[in-house]
Length: 385
Ligand SMILES: NC(=O)c1ccc[n+]([C@@H]2O[C@H](COP(=O)([O-])OP(=O)(O)OC[C@H]3O[C@@H](n4cnc5c(N)ncnc54)[C@H](OP(=O)(O)O)[C@@H]3O)[C@@H](O)[C@H]2O)c1
Image 1 (spheres, protein in one colour):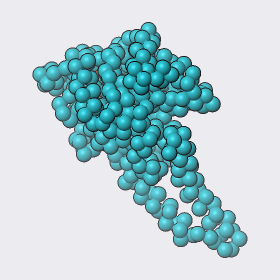
Image 2 (cartoon, rainbow, N blue to C red):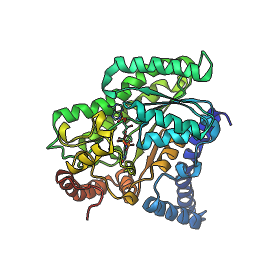
Image 3 (cartoon, rainbow, N blue to C red):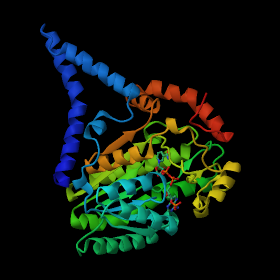
């Protein structure tokens, strides 16, 4: 199947899943009004199944129905992943290498990227190349990196007309701090890394995608956009800003061959191998946003003892990073506008925020102060008693 057909399949599957229940309910209600109820038991069963899915599921039904991305979607395609040195970005790179993608992997650490490229090369016959970029570099750094990436795409494919087929914005930092304690430097740095860098890189790559009338931009937002996250106010604001930019951009370029997918994962079990995650505290001194913060195990130990950055929750309460990467890769391949993923009870709270927001906000008013107290005292916000 061609990539365009795969995208149409994805969108039609989502539409059918969305309309199926409404259609059944409408037919049952209208037919009942005329004294001959149609599908009543089936409708009752489907509605019950939907409620159960909302209470136990970790993604929307169509994301589950569609499954993994077909190999054809990525085979031979040039995929640029930022934030690829660890965590979700690394998992994405390894997954897409297995699907035959030609990868350009970006972060600030060349040594880690080189090891990742070797691991990707070992996965399949595809190609993987490192490209160093600091997200704080502004528009000129983004333009330079984009020019380099386009050159790499041409070399990797041996095609002068090649370009970036998929751009995954994964680089970013999280936050564990109360809004009242968070300094302006932290606010600005987080917007620089989570929002401005992705906007700058998108603008740098967009002309070539529009020129070739093909390309998919994928941004990693957060469940914090769907479900406000007390203790992570600036983080939530950055991800909401990124999502709003991407959704608006989608509407601007929809008739010129460029697609946009935004993923909103809940907590992901990254950093399990002892890597220091990029997580902001109330001040820059309490944050692990510097390059050397992720460099060595020794530094990671120091950060942990100084309570810098993340105090992560239990693995079982967070999404598996490999599973999350596969769902996001599939969402982009199937042309989905959004991919929302989270463990329970966060997913259930997201449904409340959608359908009964008054209840959702009341639940947050109960949980939020405890989460914020945990963030302020350096404890995990995910394991509240
Ligand atoms: N983990 C979660 O629970 C979770 C949940 C929802 C959304 N997300 C989002 O998913 C993405 C990945 O999360 P993760 O847990 O895998 O993060 P992570 O382990 O902390 O890794 C962050 C990545 O971003 C890169 N990065 C950070 N600052 C950078 C900068 N100034 N310039 C260039 N690259 C930079 C890092 O590379 P270098 O340090 O090598 O430069 C690293 O590859 C982030 O955008 C995060 O906000 C995470």
